[in-house]
Length: 215
Image 1: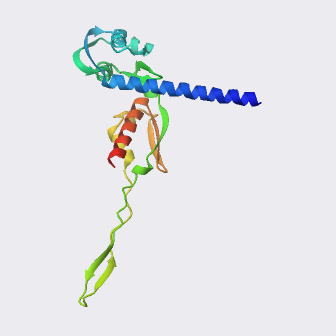
Image 2: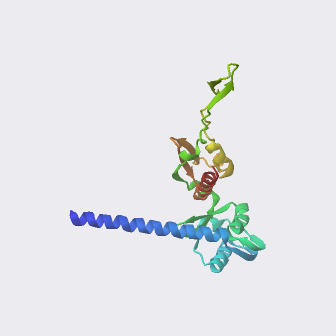
Image 3: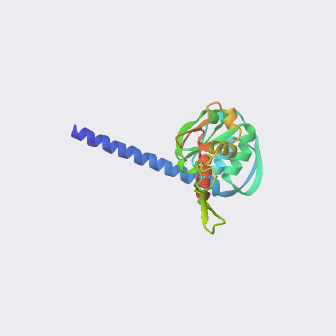
């Protein structure tokens, strides 16, 4: 039993390390497609040809879903100094094709499959829900006797809850909140329960980080 417990612990540690490695690879790939600027000159390229070019220029792993290739778009673009993410968005979105970074690989797939692929995350936003309470002091007024009278102020000391769900939906995901029936966002006890695509979840995390930075 002791050896079995040790083996199980080693297995868990190994899986955790592998998961961290995949997460690091995905973050590195996200950073590359967001910041690396390239020059392209496509004339009626297929999805595979675009992927081959970006794969060679940027040295990244790309996997194409058969459904994306089956759409057979004719992709044309001539730009320079534009990020890979922007190029893919401009080329693919008009043809209902999307992309996602997963396990350190850039996957190109039909938007229909991308919308169906949602995940659940829980984001702690308790520190953002209420502004810092301003506790008013007493109001001091002079009276005829030369003394001072003290009276509590009438201000409402109950802060309004920050409308974080409305803000998140306004600045992330676009129309997916209405069009993707599997997408949802709920607030419970200061925790955001979000069901969305990986791309939109990344957008939400950026919004929350920005709010936390400037609260």
